[in-house]
Amino acid sequence: MPIPRPTGLFPPSRPSRAAHRRPPLPAAALAVLAVLAALVLLGGCAHPAQVAVPADRPLEASAEARALRVPLDDFTLSRLDIHTIEYAEDLLTRACMRGRGFDWELLPPPARTDTDPLHRRRYGVIEPEVAERHGYHVPPPAPDQQAREQVWRRREVLPPAERRAAYGPDGQGGCRQTARTRLARSIPAVDQRQLNGFIGDTFEAAKRVPSVVAAFGAWSACMKAGGFTYRSPLDAANDRAWASSARPEPREIAVAVADVVCKRATGLVATWSAADQAVQRAAIAAHRTDFDRFRRARDAELRAARQVIGSEQTGPPSKSTT
Image (cartoon, rainbow, N blue to C red; front, top):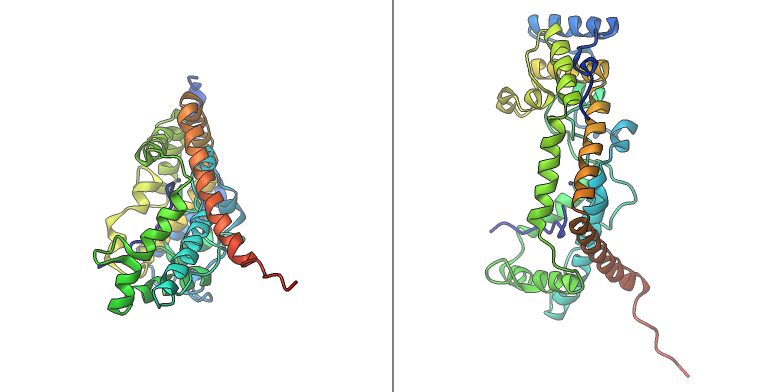
C-alpha cells in the first residue's frame, strides 16, 4: 500500500501586426544551431559541454529560474510551504506515535531557500547547463531533496504494527490522520478543484495570447534553422523519443540546447511570462471573492503549521521551583 504524502490544501487589447512578425535570428544563435545540427548528423558522438561535468551532480538553480513568479503564487503553497506543513504534521504524528509506544522519524526541517524553484521548468528547459547535461530528463535531486526521499522510502517498509499505528488498517487513518485533522481545524473550507481549475485554465489561456503565439512561431523557425521541427517548446519537451532511455541521448541533448538558444534568441520566456502575468491578474480581478477565500485558507494552513513548529521549538513551560 503506497504511503500517502500530504500536499497541503493548496499545491501552482488587440496586438499590432508587428507583434506577429518573426524577428530575424541573431548570428550567434544561427552559429550555435549549425553546430548542433552537425553534431546530430554525425550521430551526436560527443557533446562538448558534457565532457568535464559529472552528470549526477545537482545543478544550482539559475538566477533566471529563481526570478520566475506568477500572480497565483500569492494564493497557493510554495514547495517550502508544503515542507513546512509536512514538518508540522510530522511533529504531531511523532507525539501521537510516542503515545502508542512507537517513535517516528521526522522529515528534515524546511530549508530557508528552495533548491529547485517551483517555476524552474514552467516554460520548459531554460538553463543552458541543465540542457547540456540532462536534456529534457529530470535532473537528479539536490541533497536536501534526496534526504526527504530517503525518509519517505523508509516509511514504505515500516513494521506492520508501526504502519497500522501511523496510517490505520486502511492507510487512511492512524496518527497521520489525527495530525492532519489537528492542522485543518482552523482552516476555512475551500474548493481545491476550483483553484486548480484557475491554475490550469490561466496557463492554457496564456499560451493563446497573440504575442505568445507569435513567439512560438519565431521559436519554431529558430529550431527549424537548426534542423529540428517542433511547433512549441512543450512539444519538444514532450517528444516521446526522450522516454525511451533512462539517460538523455545525444539528439535529445542537441534539441534541448537548441531549445534554450532559441528561447533566448526570440525572447520567448519574457513574452510568455508577461502573458502569464496579465492573464492571471485578470482572473484574480474577475474572481476577487474566490481568491480572497483561497488566500485566507492558505494563510490559515501555514499559520497552524508554524504554530505547531514554534511550540515544538519553544518546548513545554518549565515548572516553578518556588
